[in-house]
Length: 376
Image (cartoon, rainbow, N blue to C red):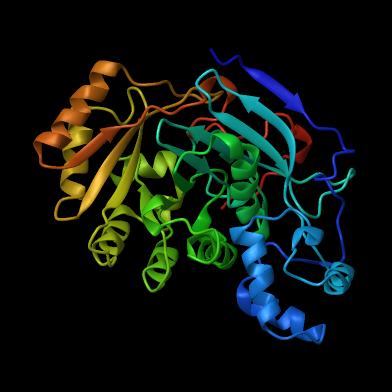
């Protein structure tokens, strides 16, 4: 049996560094590394060596880039640094899930900047849930993250760093397959450039080498971002956070729906270019007595008709908000109505509820001083 535990890391930990004026190597694509080495008078192949060390070997310091001569490592260290997010605290669930509170680059003792990521081990794989913003501006009423408002966008280094820390921290127990879901704090498509820079490195066979089949970006329905993502050569799978069966309902719990209503959102989904192996995912958080009625299920079935899609039903996870989880019997009725209409549908019970690591629970509970609400 795994015992719930907390582990603190003091400010003396070398991973919790103060802000540095030097360039951060993490998050830089190959083209930017080429520009950097050229300023040092080095041939461009040195950039490929650094890129491989950063992302394939996952080194933690510049001194570990053994393919570079010692003198070049010294000169590189004078103009750049390699910062991985520092583990401020680990919260380990009884089910093996770990919620990480991570300190990001640019943090100081007087200006802390933290974010959360979740590591979920399974029998044959592990899933890492990462954040793309600190806090969130979309203000979904059933999500604890919304209570933070938007603190700031994360950089590509911040985003990649969450994956790398989780992999390193669990190195000895990793399974063959790693899934990454952009479903933590924030709306990924409102931080588009940094998210895509990180994803291109994450999905690059010469980078972190995660398959596009194993990476999912979840959006509340930012239509311009969906349309832009559709044009990308390298991209993850797409998940739409639906959570309602009509506009009136969705307006009440997802204010973003007033800007991007269901009719327009579903049209963007219908024109989205799916790859041969791909389905759209619709996520539907079931709020007891609000959106879990049989007529809701029938309306959802109609909304997503003629789409190659699957539906993940997610019973609401408890938090200090005016909602409650649905009855198990209502969940099953909802699922069966969708299945009988010919839709792929799954019930996803979130893990890590006992350490506030489940879907919609990430809210920096140990850092209330960070809360400076900004919402759309």
